[in-house]
Length: 615
Image (cartoon, rainbow, N blue to C red; front, side, top):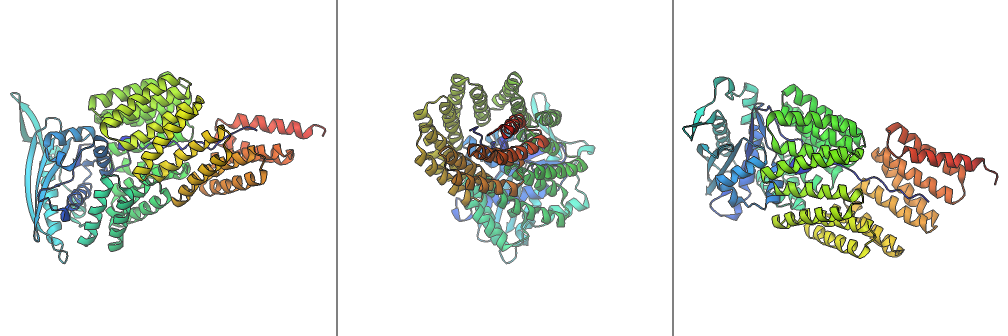
């Protein structure tokens, strides 16, 4: 029997490159969480909530590109930076450069009774110069929140004022001077309306949102989602909370629920007439559909986002969306299309001088070349990405790239080189304390050992990956590791252990409502039953898998399952039925142009010959 499994989904959300709240190319700004100088834990959530609100206000301006908060939090996790580190302008500059920001906003706050005071500093990342400082005061009264929102409006205006300056080096010393009149940021009346609109009229909702952000930046996505849901229950029009809820659910592997949250945010942005918000959310929905391998739906949303971004003249946003379209095409095996989109994205990134974005797109270009089997070009692209990451001091990005270089070597049977790359990646990840990265690399190490037949080493590496995923509460990651552990057990002839471990993974995927993952695991369980000759059990698993793949519109997966059912019917001697299933698989593969079509064609032709042979 020919053994096939469902293809792994290739969706890269690399180094925080997501469809972001982004505007025209002129100024790229990162707003860091404000530090709680009073050290009162009861108001700790106020810092990230104020920073998020300021980001939302500033994204009203087409002249700005606001760095996605998702990117910031991921970077802080990777770099193991604490909030206290970001009070130091030099550390803030370091973070800003890794994020590709021209300016960084950082500051502190203190709350005494109903009074809140905020001190903000605005730092030029190129020179490390503090270009301006602003202090605002407001009241914090849940019964009358206008005083608090007015203080944040003042802070938004202070940010705009700081961006109307730039730094010149005069006699080896930085000097802050006004920008030319043509480059001044002057909000239009429509932008001014959005700039001053409160994100919510419920400070209780804002407090829940702030608690969610605290959990989110620690990687505690379950707690974060719970708080974001609480915020939306208090104010169903709180668009920031819906967006953050979608992001948390996506990180939990609950992609269908993430889409629902993002769709609610999109409808709110439509009502508000907020086209940048619409573009951002369409892009996020595209990412979630890609995670589900609903490629057609993903591309529809990406193209909708791209159309809006072109209308807005947002080259930075276009680069990100082109990058993600390229990734989607790589996931579909359409590598030439992927390379064309990555080339367009890279041209924008180079024009904008966005080196983190260039590194991400070069990495994605390497993936497309790798899919074509062009190893030299792939390694060259990965090498260029690695050089930029080393220049930026981005050790987390280096670890990702080195891991992928290991994956390439491993896929070509160069296992010594693969394991050496994984070892280097683990050193970087352990230095950073990046347990999620370590889990991924231990998993990859297990794969390298598994294909060499080193079962004990493979299970040891998988076991370490599983332990880390359990520690992190990453149930989607646990399910993936369990699937591979099951395959090792199967290779050892331990059928009972194989099925038991697959069932553990299936229960996790059912809990997560991960229908694509369920389809893959059911397909694999069917393969195990078929090898045992338990054809009725195998068919039940295949049919459950096929129903899910059809529901999701995952056509390539449908072809794999149909072919496996054909194998089963062939083993039963039911050649006419086998031929029918092979023909259905081939029809899909021919329509999609996937690499498996020649294999399906051979199976169909063999069955035609078998069916004509005398019994």
